[in-house]
Amino acid sequence: LSRPPLVLLFTWMALPFALRVDGRGLIARPALAGVVALALFFLARSAGTTLAREGLIATGPTPWLTILAFALASGLGLRRRAL
Image (tube, rainbow, N blue to C red):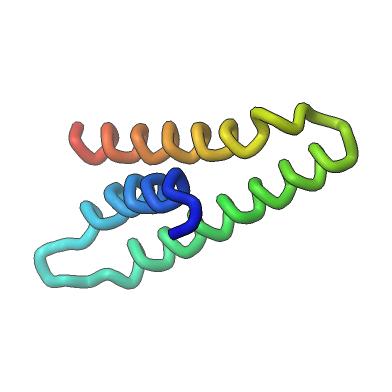
């Protein structure tokens, strides 16, 4: 909870997976997909931090670009579920 943007992002990321739960209450596939999405987020964040530390990419916008990329991906997932 020390990083409110991440709390909002994780909530936003959970929405497309929550909409995949069917009427029978089967949540195994959406839960596994959610775990994979979180793992990819932390992998991307770690890679961005390492690249910024090495001076290969800009330090300031790197964390925000990671958050923005995953927020956009979640938005696309929501849009796809709505269609």
